[in-house]
Amino acid sequence: EIVMTQSPATLSVSPGERVTLSCRASQSVSISLAWYQQKPGQAPRLLIYGASTRATDIPARFSGSGSGTDFTLTISSLQSEDFAVYYCQQYYDWPMYTFGQGAKLEIK
Amino acid sequence: QVQLQQSGPGLVKPSQTLSLTCTVSGGSISSGSYYWSWIRQPAGKRLEWIGRIYPSGSTNYNPSLKSRVTISADTSKNQLLLEVNSVTAADTAVYYCAREFRTIFEWGQGTQVTVSS
Image (cartoon, rainbow over all chains, first blue to last red; front, top):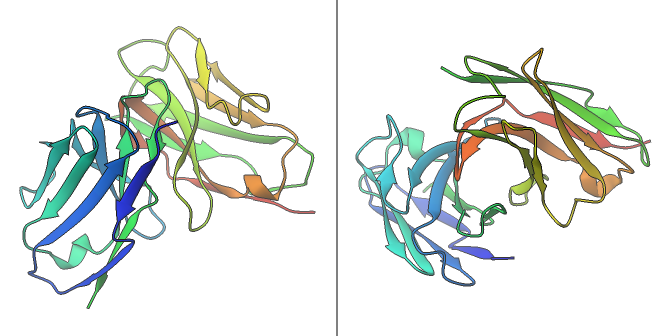
């Protein structure tokens, strides 16, 4: 099983700041990597797939990069609605999927 | 637009069977290019993929749950069905159904299932 590890677990930031979240895979997943945003009491929402392709209706302030084992999600200027938990997911090991443990963005 | 509406009991006794239904609207579960998965999330823990069913009716399961899980479909009602038998407290989680193809495009609203006597 491919293990996904996210860092940091929690990040305290102020609106308007630039944020970078990291995700590392225990073995190469090429670019078979997606990012999701989850707000309290809601289902996750797809942000990025293919490591760097924004999903439909996702604002341009969200960007993804990386390949192999190391990936990043960047939010260029944090908005109030972006405070949430973010998960990475690998689908290289399809039909099996695995997720990171999540990274929580909280207001400083 | 595809929508997924989940239903089922929120409380299950230990050793019994957890059963959830996901009704899909806006698309057929028995045709098209998408697959249908169940995913769960224990409180404070990472998401865990449970398994999927293809439009053809074939299935894949997470090896860690395979012996206790059955995913099926009622195509006449456009519904997905999840059964987890011999549940324990470790099966307490929010359960989601989802439409996916490598990435997960739409999710159900989630069902909190608690295993307790």
